[in-house]
Image 1 (tube, rainbow, N blue to C red):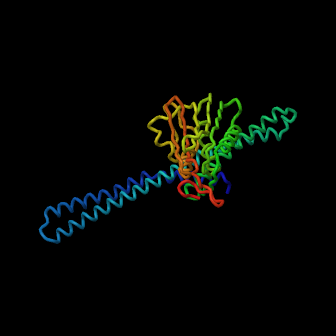
Image 2 (image 1 turned 90 degrees about the vertical axis):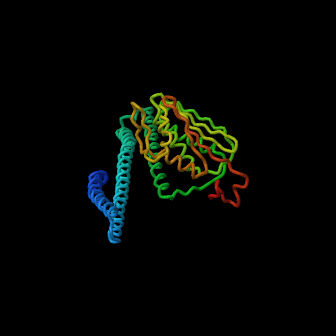
Image 3 (image 1 turned 120 degrees about the vertical axis):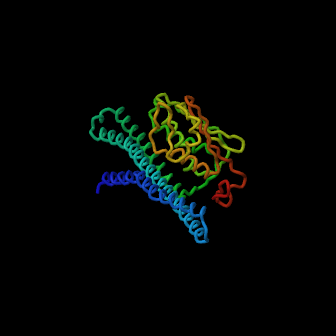
Length: 329
């Protein structure tokens, strides 16, 4: 069976899982109505009881009614949770497939242009096609990395390998990679690195955190994009800051932006495309390295995300092993 057919079958199954309103209503009517009748009879029996037998029957009837109601509530909660998970899976599949189509289509278009030989005699156009292909490949790679990182984190399989040293090299590497993801005239991207404190960190994890923050800033800025990446020593911590000139985040949503699958919505502007996992990955990863992540934002004034990681204490490195804050190795 083709991959497209398998994908459509999965979507149909997920949509079927979402149609749980009917079963929940039937369950409620089938259980709650008899339970109410039983409870009413039990109350009457207890109110009018004359023999110990009436008392026992009344108590048993009340217990049966309570058990039935409790069971109905538990099943309803479980069905509701199943519906929510199915809805999240359907949204994730839809969003990811949409995100993957865009760079794949662009890569194919530029590859076919080069293959046709139409631009073979124009080195400038050839270079533009190659650079565009590299940009789209970077976007594609970042999406795949995001999904793999979340999959590992969700299954508690994300093993961090700590090294101790300044964050300047990794910040500079991320800035160079991010520059390859857009045209030079598309984004005003400023980088300032002024840090020398050693930090116990996982290089790949820090790259993932910063790249997710930069991609998030890119998505939520308008046509005139200004994004800055800076790193500085702040007492016994190192702060890495990503700032943008986007539409900002309403105060009512600030507490939810690090939830998985949540995407910011503002009045008059739909949520940006994506899986809604970027900031969730940032939060989980930074906390795993003993740090914190915070955000300051106002609608219309952009957002500033600050990642703070503790500087390594003396004796962090011993016998070739690197110990992370909190005793992790």
